[in-house]
Image (spheres, rainbow, N blue to C red):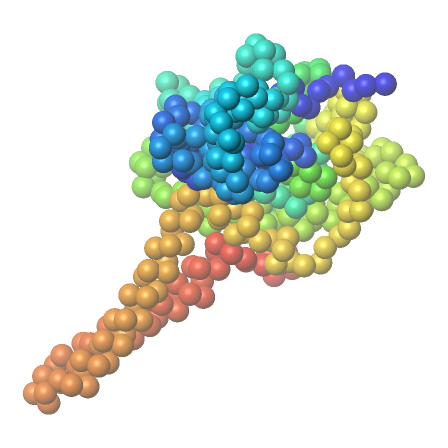
Length: 444
């Protein structure tokens, strides 16, 4: 029996466009398929290929963009491929006819792409480009400048699976506890009555009517969105998350945070500041809980189903229950890992290495252009601070006695301030891009 829902024949946003670099190939794994994202100065849009050179299967993501042709060059033997994946150059070929006659035989597998709503979208089935053209993107209605919305974006890889992510974001009742002090307060937690409005193979919609009217929309397989309305002027806050399945036990979140108010605050707040102050901390608050939860669940599912494994008696659990039903009915309760060579949750074990699970650099910073630039600026400022401190002491030491008191005190004080600034950069600011432990017991 085959699943009714096809994960491969869908569009996935895999990167915010502002985080991708021209002339620098980037690797990514989508549904177990290693891909290379690239764009030269001569290309109009980013291309996505299977990350394998057909010659000897070297990773094209380790390649480069040739300055003369603008094509993607494999760094192993120099084979080149244009934006259609066709092989255009084989340096070892005795004559050009060999290349011309075998262009399509030596071609790279190409995945359809689109660029919309500030995101790079990829169709996960390279064999059905015609179907990709007909199927619309799962776009959010809140990413719309004409309706007065502004937004920022974020990408991060997570140490748990696609289904665990969807289940978690579909559960607003965890927020006051898992994100205490960031997005809620555990002492102010209240019952949440979730009402399922629609449920089909292509859409689940739920509503929460409390102080704020909230609509939660799940458009499989990736878009899970909150629209929160409040005030008497139609103010709206949006959380748009796209969950991208990478491999068993790993997924990626591409998130957009929208609102139709506070425009000035949006303009002056750097993305990197949002990321280190709130966005990464929220994901850290879930990470270890969900990493372990999904592995406990998989152990239980070996002998029983989720209905017996979970105890979900309240209305706050209704959307999680509806998602689990949808997953059972349309996907047979599993992702199609066996089609790309994985056994479902094969050999997944709990990791107690907190620095690995909460590794902000590998999961986020190296992908985020704003955070990378902020980190580079941090290193420059550290060097400048130390140089200024050394110079202030040196100049004070050689000043004539008549100037040492007036100018020397100023130089020493500012030198000490520069040391304090260096310490703040080194021991608080810099770790925000690498690792910050999240201990729930310490969050008072």
